Length: 215
Image 1 (cartoon, rainbow, N blue to C red):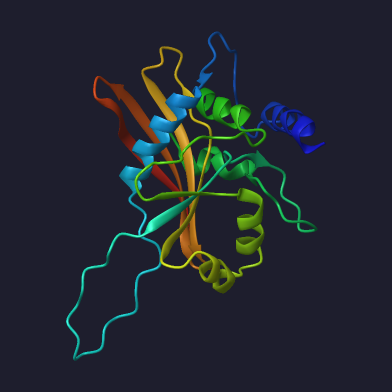
Image 2: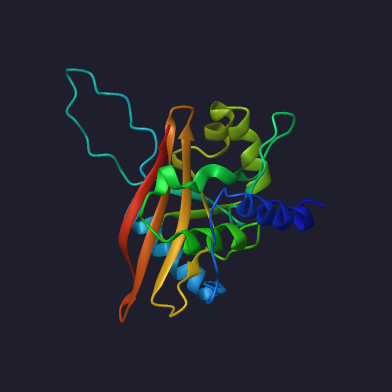
């Protein structure tokens, strides 16, 4: 049921002024599977999530460099939806991309298109990316929603937390892309970041990024 209702909720939210879309003459396109994989891979490399820092060493011990840890990434794209205190929400809040947080980082239209493209979860193929382990989203969300971080790390030891990525959207000329990443690694460890990427002959490159929240 949620899959069919979510697009209507987002449409109503945009129409009510949550995000102003204005008159649409051209529509951004949702990234294809290979495009989404490449865009998210470039974004993960840019963010280089390290997770919860290790405890400080004893005075008698030398400081050791932290070895890179794998990051867990959801097998499905992030979605935007209505939050409810009565049940575990599997979507980011609709107001996550409101104007006060984003400012002039990207156009309202491109932001609106990102919301529309992520009204529901969709499978994304990220298997095989460096330092990435693909995990089932629903099971992991329940662990983190109830702040069961001990259970999380018991199940996934020596990892840098977990990431959900939206499906990216491309500008009408397909030269740029917008994607949203959420990283969570403990009750007070996490970020939400918008990334704007440029397509180059050598692949996608992050042109700029905007942090929307920090835990």
